[in-house]
Length: 121
Length: 121
Image 1 (cartoon, rainbow over the protein chains, first blue to last red):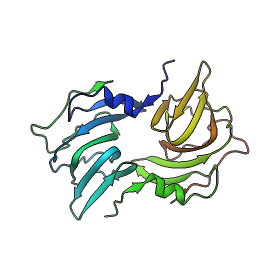
Image 2: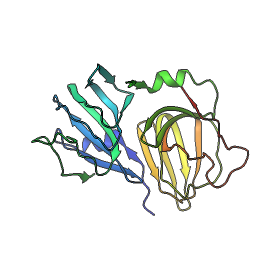
Image 3: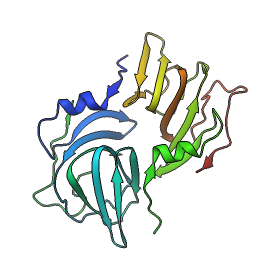
Image 4: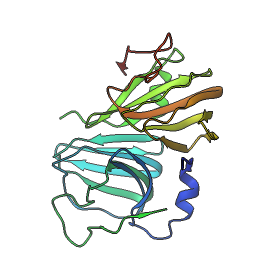
């Protein structure tokens, strides 16, 4: 049986690139993904699923149609399915994403920022 | 639309009792629950689901049939469905649990430590 503890900091040390989503754990059909973010993302939504952002380090803004959320280290939010959102890091932000394994980062928006190259670390 | 940021530390301030699971967020049919733990729990399993433990503060041991996992702040583990496990805190440990909303803390073991009184905070 392969059950192992995941240390977020140690995993981030292994991530050299920005904006490359790395899978660190699975719970049923959900993936836990880490990403180092330093950009303003695009407006998009996931009609089929809620999506959780946990800030491990740094600061993150998530624009919604009617407000802008501000998250810092030790904070999380669950974005409801179908709700348009636009994440933007304040400098570099280290993020834990939790969502179904099949979820695509750009949702239904698609485009050049789509990352289908999920790697386990 | 009610989408709000959750700060783990601020939520723990609202939890006065040990071993009382409090729901802080929902992602589809999954709950994010906080618990302040200071005890050795019982052997149990959840045949229907994996279960994620994230240590927000303190130290946690989780005994499995073939090993003992040691987790500290900033670490997580996904316990596979059906695997017997026995969590034990080292002093007081602040834990984030992620699992389907219907998951019972004692799994199929039942007994006096079962907590069916889930409250949102």
